[in-house]
Image (tube, rainbow, N blue to C red; front, top):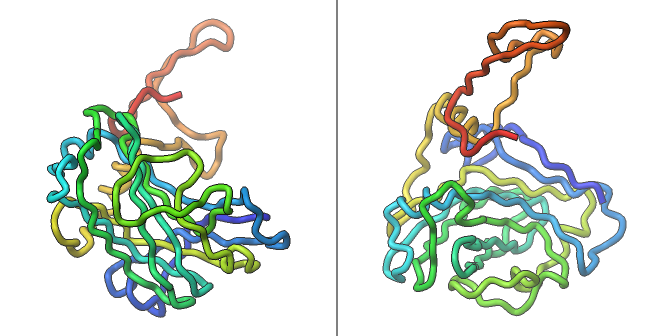
Amino acid sequence: EAPTFEQVSLTSSDTGPWAKGFRKALQITNGNQTGGADAADEIDLYHQIEAQNLASSGWDYSSNSSYINLSYWVKSSVAQNFYGYMVTSDGTNYMYLWETGALTANTWTKITKKIPGASGLQFDSNNDIGMYMYLFPFLGTDLTSSISEDTWMAATSTNYTADNTSTWYTTNDATFAVTGFQLEVGDVATAYEHRTYADYLAACQRYYYKIASDNAEDSMFGVGWASSGSYFQTMTTFPVTMRTKPT
């Protein structure tokens, strides 16, 4: 198969997220689907959250009476149910599974999940990964099982969700789009906190940035000096403090 991942533009016909100020979405297209659904097949998207962001968020993650709320918009070209889950990275690994419920084809649906803390959860105060958040357009039966939803449990390396409906995956050029993710501390989900382009750009540059111009041969990356032959030294200033030393 040949799935593609791309940023797509929303229009006023995208009822729901457009009215809330969203103009872009991440979309997966399941292209060249000819082989059906095999047991080991998998398409997913995920986000990594720094441990220190969770540790200092104000969420009492060891208490089942303290909550975080996850909200996002999702749209599928095929009407069916989909799964997502979170899995922690520090200490003993725990996972939390949820489902979208049956989506109407080509219709944006807002998903909101209220997630409690639990005894045993651990998030260290460092810049390593504290938790992954996954969405699964499809998982084959090698990666699924009978798993309880809406509760924390010990994570497994082979079973992530309950058995998946395969209709989306076996439909050529089926699409799955998401936008408007927000994870926040509190008993209720609040309206999305829109920030400026400059804020988002600086937050992204903590993890990655690229020095480029329209002409790749004319990109300025620092101020320096030449020495003998082809040897030179240069000083490069990063736009923000990055998560770790660059490679």
